[in-house]
Amino acid sequence: MKLNCDLGESYGVWQMGQDHQVMPLIDMANVACGFHAADPMVIRQTLALAARHNVEIGAHPSYHDLPGFGRRSISHTPDEIEALLLYQLGALEGMCRKEALILSYVKPHGALNNDMMRDKTLLRAVMVATRTFRRDLPLMIPVTRNYREHQHMAADVGIPLLLEAFADRAYDDDGQLVSRRQAGAVHEDPEIIVRQARSFAEQGGVRSATGTWLELPADSLCVHGDNAAALSAIKAIRLALGKSG
Image 1 (tube, helix red, strand yellow):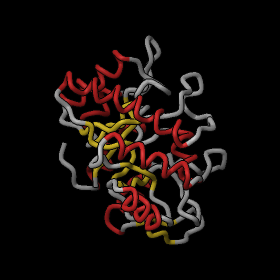
Image 2: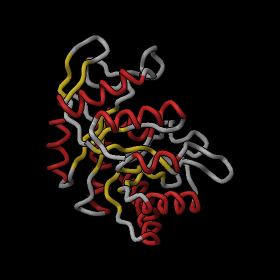
Image 3: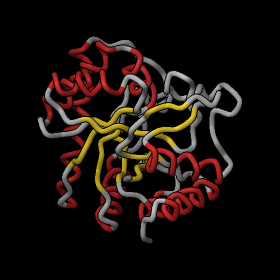
Image 4: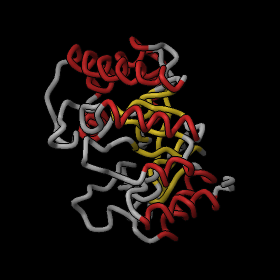
């Protein structure tokens, strides 16, 4: 199972994350496109770092919400969503040319990601935008108990779909991430994080916060590396999954 991480989220003199330490440990980098974080130089530096470590590049587009880090919902029509994504994907693909990199997938960020998983019209608009940009470009979305419906929708639109799971987040009985507002939503114990990563990789699912078994087959596991404890967790996950390095 491939590990992915949100990177390139600094902006000007404001620094976010530990990209140089994280990049050698992952397989896929979700690179901010400038709407929730990043600027041209941050993007360029992030892509150069990814090229150095042979990491796949994914676009991490969002609502146009730099002050709110893309975590605030903004109402858009399907046409506006398509324009929003095409603008960001085009910018990142252009930057990729400097490092001879190819855009490998799209993973929406923050509120856009959350909203599209609740609204089928919005999700379809994101899928259509991805297909418009490039027909063979996969869209990465969170895996839920409705993953088969999402797979059928992607097939109908005509794009590949990647399903993503989280090692450090608790799941409710519907296969959705437990809200960060609730206690226990984010796992901090490295043993729990590694156990959940292995469950996704080896059993194709995980137990919810109440103990219910959830069938959640995932193609990629999202990890976070914005502090020392998170970096240690990534290293432990790599070891548990038999990854070298």
